[in-house]
Length: 377
Image (cartoon, rainbow, N blue to C red; front, side, top):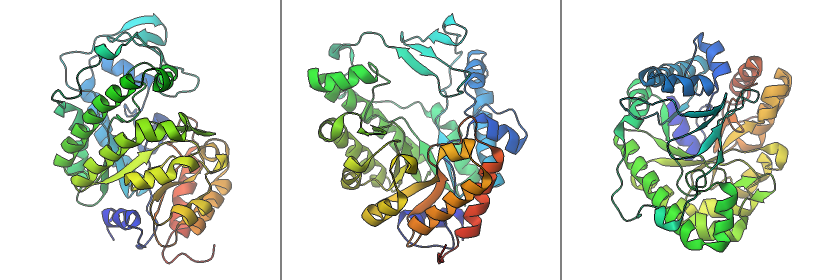
């Protein structure tokens, strides 16, 4: 069976020949070792500085080469391709405020932590009033050059594999506006600002969905987190008021183009999973069993409506043993594999600190236990 067909079966809650596998993102340590390269795909500081040095084409080439290489190396069934920096004459080095701190051309202050190796985060946002936001009714344009890696991976793998475009998420655009705390505050103090901002950025997301569909991708993934370990960041009521309508519009746009829609969101989602179902979400990635998102319960309550992308805690991949990884894979397949609807992947991504031998054990265990029909494990 082709990997693409295996993924479609999982998303349609049908059993195929085996549980499919893949990853939403792989940081540089695993890619460098797996492929014997010095990657610029999700290489954080390495990627940022390459862009400032005028090496945008190298970044695009690395995305294509390394995503195709990882797919073949690990036998993935799906591959997630992010947007890349658009073509410009140059990306000048920003105003550096410290060794790993800088101000961008929009006035936002970013900080990268080499100790954690995570994504650079915005630590300061410029003042933004409702009148500063563009009119959501105005025409939206898409920079086709941002889809260059998507287009090339589709050409390389699209006949055999399930290709997913990861686009910007407009449903909860705190990072593109005023920051998390202020955005949540304005849900109460300035709801008109929230409605306008979400409408504007959701319209951009939908335009990106249309552009990705034209290139022949099979699915869309968006990635802003809605929850922390305790539940929805804004609470269920405000989620339904300010986020859910825009999530529904985004999902609808993907379905209109004949694509599946997967939402990445970490955290405790029990209070809004019914809303995911109501919005038409096909797959959910970001499942964290260690904070109470138990796959057995998820399968019982939502196994007919949602496909679960997950099975192994990131903590186990970074600090555990291959034997512990194998046990998590076995349990996930036992609890969520029957009748389809499970895609094996990490609870988030292969982040810095992931042990290569642990990920190799995850791939091997998926092959060992994941053949249909699922036996007693």
